[in-house]
Length: 200
Length: 200
Image: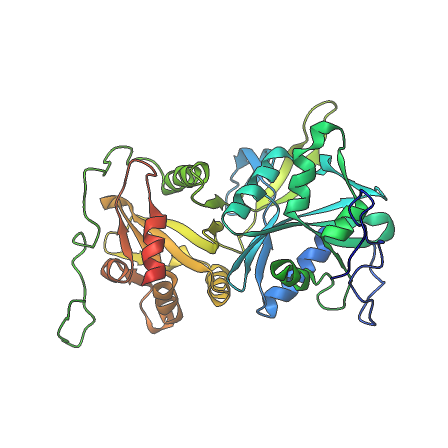
């Protein structure tokens, strides 16, 4: 381990110079895809390759009125979006319970905590207590940079937001977590970084 | 272990005389509740007691048309029910990934395989390969009897249904799995039987 002499601040690695080696595996195309699409595509690859079973949960909807036409499928005529009580993604990977949220931000230097609801944080805390692996995949859209941020970092900033700071600095995310380099298959190979998170 | 002398058939315990001791903890009321309500209530208890984090997934819906009235919440004006690609319930319990389906049947002596879709079986098989704990909670409504049926039993009958038999006999479910006795809190204490399933 490298020793960093103290200057009163925690050591911040320069973003972009993270552990991730930029190899020829990196794909620069398709940057217009949403993070959700990229993760769904990656999960499909993981599923088909027998590597993991991780799905996005359906959007929770409060159904108010359903119409049943004869001889055809039921049509929902009125419904409302409900607030999710959990994170968006969960599943199983080599016996381990995986639970995460995926968030994009247009901010360049920090990730706003307003991206989360209290009950999502509570859900992740409860999962961590059950020895689940929890994290957030954060995409800084402007630079097309993706990070796996451990839940501890999120909890730390979340629990202290009343002190004033309402966002997590990008430097901290890069330091505490891992920058995920795009690859061909899967596009976002986040389980590789989950391995590192587990062995940390 | 008791020894059962072979008669060419596998040993069938008499249903009702399962391992579950009928104690004064048993509740006979509220039998009109749906199995889903009972499990949701039990999951709420498990969550609030810090025992496990298990949720029902939202019903998957294909949203076609959304109306955004001014100053109020978006209203879904047209949507369709989609077929679920996974089971209904999953979560984490003491580091273990839990995945199950809950099904009621009005049949008295067997559980029809038509309660399942191919992709739900495939999903459970994939989860088992990742060392997840998979099972079905089956309720025979007529007798208000609930069983935890291991996924192996389901797979066995599912994979052989083209041979003719399209249902799983209740005796087999009782023998391979566990009858779950209603309790006060939680109403369906299925995790107790998951412990037994793990230690089997």
